[in-house]
Image (cartoon, rainbow, N blue to C red; front, side, top):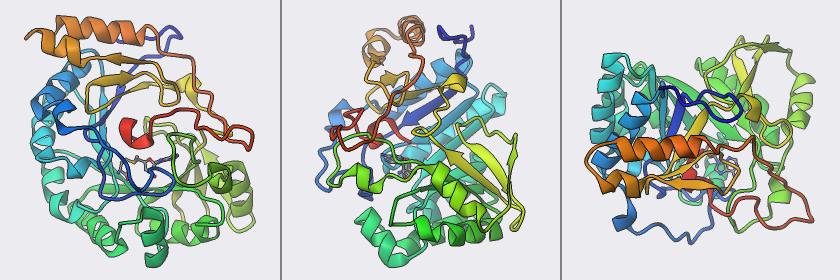
Length: 331
Ligand code: SAM
């Protein structure tokens, strides 16, 4: 039953982008005037549930909803409530999401009631003006209220920050103290060359090897074997007692331990975040009421999961390595 790819990796983690739309326009993620998918191309919530259920039947243990912004998909709580039956049955070990936090004040209690125990909140700065600049449309106070609501509801929050040269690099020590002071892990992410944006990615790219060396001037970082099922490698920070993660697709890829595939809101399955190859699951899903066709399409897709990505950011290659934006496949 298990999904095992040609390199012997067991696929147990599905990330689902439930919408490509977002209420922010982070400059490194999207262009300001994005064209989004026509609503008629989207899978219905029932179809998303059905597809997720097929994956769970095939051995997925961890499911992460992402986007776009997952919490702006209309009636997304209906989907989450439905999916929580797999937590109750024990088939699924974790149901979680990655969010920009803007809608958490509204949804935190219900998420907790659905068995969501941990979430990732993306936050790149603690400065309200800089926050507005980087997100183009976002308000920091709303996100802060969302984080408060999640913590009050008993949900464990991890903060994800994309490390951006000359934007937030000087602020990372402060963010680290703030996150750890509130009992939250902080994970730093390298920018990936995905989709056309209005800026030059070479100007934004900050290798985390450099960031780590800079942090080590101020903090004592010790590598620890802590794992959450994702690609981050963690250190413990002696001064704060908290954990700091590094997601380094550029300086050190983590493909050898890749256990995940990514489903978009149109039913396209990407076997690798950094490659173009994909499989359409919408047609086999809609072709019959049973799930045999879609299960077969999933097996074929897993059978061609590539060894890894080959992202490059340098001045000679101005085009992104992957043409789709991160908002299509989710982070
Ligand atoms: N809207 C949700 C959020 O903000 O977390 C979920 C989707 S968002 C695309 C997921 C994550 O991808 C965010 O942490 C975002 O900062 C990150 N991201 C977007 N574009 C990226 C890029 N080109 N390189 C690295 N991370 C990126």
